[in-house]
Image (cartoon, rainbow, N blue to C red):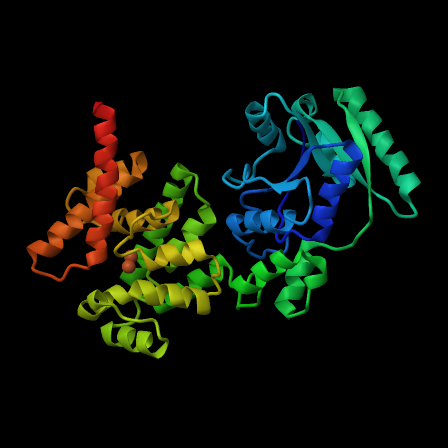
Length: 404
Ligand SMILES: [Fe+2]
Ligand SMILES: [Fe+2]
């Protein structure tokens, strides 16, 4: 099969991206072109990117309208910055019988020899270069050819040019327009547009950056709670490194997990009633549990976090829940083992286990929590037990399999 790869941030993917993929497919006779969103894109304007899952899903939704164009989740789990030669090495190892074409713009071509290991890239893939098909096309084509000659004389390679309809449209502009409330529907595939609207992506929600949030949290929390929060933050970062989870997400979730801890029980109950957040039987009996739910609400409304994964990790950080994401688990564990904690039994053991096998660490934490709560005759949130049963079963099944 002939496969084309078009990498990018795709935050969000717009018409020009899909048109480029379709043009490459037609011009080079490819069977499929993959839009391959990268893991954690740094935006030059400092704005936070939509989560990689959102960007991948938007690519998939948009691609439905373009036959032969698809989305690939190959890069979204890789930590940024990732180098193209590595992606191609891994991708080609998974597609040994396919012919791969790596697609790039003319700007990238001009910088290509400065990339990390361009000689590996040209060995693995053919290169397709987009050239703007406006009045200056012939001139641009000549420039591109000159650059290609320079590259091939140095490292070889098989390059082709792809003429595309020129456009000034950029994802940065689209994000800015959405923030200003300007209608951008003409630049997006309708399903992508709906996706962005329904999740409120890129809307202006007092976007604060990490440093601003940290300053606010410091003001709002007691000194000891702030110290604990920072402990959770860097422990969550370390665990994110270990388990290949987005470090920015882990850091933000850690920073905000106890952001409602400044409220006492009465305030938490009042807040939940006022904002219709609902109070379960367990929360009614132990109102302090509400700080997770209220924390997630504040994270969204006051700190502008729209990433559902982060909000979920904050929501479940006290009790956990069955089938947690890795980020959920990381925050729950970091909350328990961060360096300012000293009271729990088996801490040293759990701390080591957290970096070896996070599911075992979860089971140990919940086991100890349940024991502690029962021993003191305190009320047990059923969700803690449900989570324990769920993960204990995973461990038991694993052990059974290993002993077979
Ligand atoms: Fe908490
Ligand atoms: Fe905490």
